[in-house]
Image 1 (cartoon, rainbow, N blue to C red):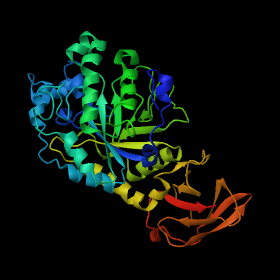
Image 2: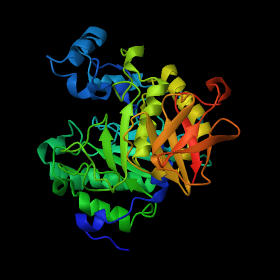
Image 3: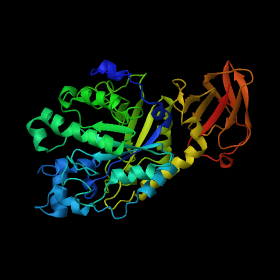
Length: 425
């Protein structure tokens, strides 16, 4: 099918099924902003470069206090060394976490590229700083694993002279050629665009680019772009629909029949904020609850990590990822490849379906009997608890399926946080 240069046609393209099956991905915000690794509590550290020249900003005060009055954002680049970065170690961790795809921030709003680009001369990680192509290294490390390589790319750049002079000329002469270069050079599975909100999609020439992406590019059969293509497009137009820390578009909701993806950090920032403390980070229980909530609605979870400037993933982030991976090894059959089963009225129980099986995710261990109010009772229905051998007793409670856990102790189950009942009805 050939897609036309209009939203009706472009929106008719289905989101490739691999993405809807994957459910869990890793976001990576990493760049010169990782050197100061600073933001006031609750704000984004990756916006350091935007705020640091504003004398009234806490970012500026932090820069002057820490680095001196003459220090500039560009001076962080030689300090962005990545000497401890190992792409294979990262992907091994993501695979162990149960992630099925990753999005590297190939260019944030500061314009600094994490790969060699003809459109960012001397402002990319190959020409300056670490002198390494992180897109190339991570893509290679993904090969032969369960983790698909993808990228994030900012449409606008805070201080690009051409953007400040003429946004549409910037889009035509800089942004679109850069995007095409990125796509054809690295052939990513995802394209998470951002920084779209200052201009309408007509200025960005978004439909022309997506028409090329869907019809002519080498990734046309499998790439998953998102919905950030201009003012007013979030939650409405493009590929998968994105939320961010629970916030989306203009009306704070997405269309029910479209695949959506929530992205957030383990803490309150995407880029590493070394001033955050333990209380700012979600626990493994909170992250798994959120994953279950999202997947039960048919959505994906893109969880961010913010590496250090020398290329390490902070230990607390690694711990959270490994905790999620341990849970997914036991309970993943109810997550991967699943679809929405129903809206649950009980926040402590969520559901998915996969084939003929229904999965009930129970957030508090259910001692004794529990009735699954959303699952009708059927003769011959069988139930089992993932991470525990043997079947559970089932019964009929006013036409709803009742599960009897008997005297099973949580200590005898190879799972924690959330418990999954598999029902073959």
